[in-house]
Image 1 (cartoon, one colour):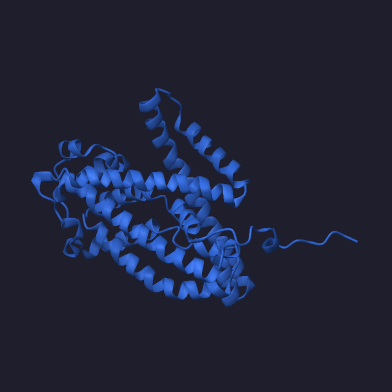
Image 2 (cartoon, helix red, strand yellow):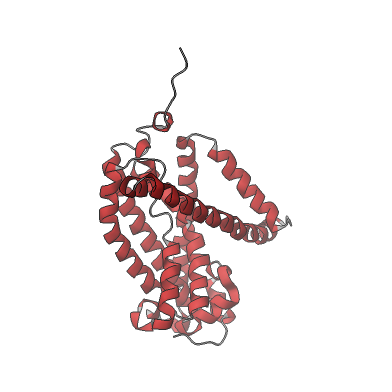
Length: 295
């Protein structure tokens, strides 16, 4: 008799993942350090407004409303294909194929961009820490190779490796934020970044687009439903926890970066330092800030 064909669902590691594993996968996709150091500093530089944390809070509220329906759909559509499977279930296979093409293009573009972001950062970091000088694209290739190797391993191994990476990333963010908050410009902690009146109509649209990018990865947990324990319960908890962690880390990290600089210098400093603004010692940020104004 010919060998029976095995479906994708049969080859997945069923009943292996709990909420913490799904949260880990989602946060790894989001890369909180990259969001705070790269996306948020870019938002300040592009929009010219310090109140980006307010936009992030607003986006989190909208996603919380969206998640109410999203997790209900996920209970009925359990498929590792991610968002396009929802489109196929609701609108038919042709719409699902279009959705899959758009999703593939978007995620591929994001992945390529992340390698381009990681390469120069690794180049500078390794040169400072080890004295090893290699072109940025070499470090990007190393990152690609690590991802390729891990991608061929079981999901259990990946979840453990990513858990270590995420915990380290969140620990770094916590330490950096704490240090920033203890070095306020002028001797007092400013709440200007949390003031919604700092926003303007001209900057709001761009800020919203950037805020949407910051929450990429929030949608990931349902893709692991077939490998989860108690999928409906696990996916729901994971989605809500991911959103909570993202919001706290992004808002706290962004606000903390404004404290040692001072609200009136945030935009100029972001334009001067770019992603390096996150890791420049708090005691040096005020000195490096350039004259500038914010809306």
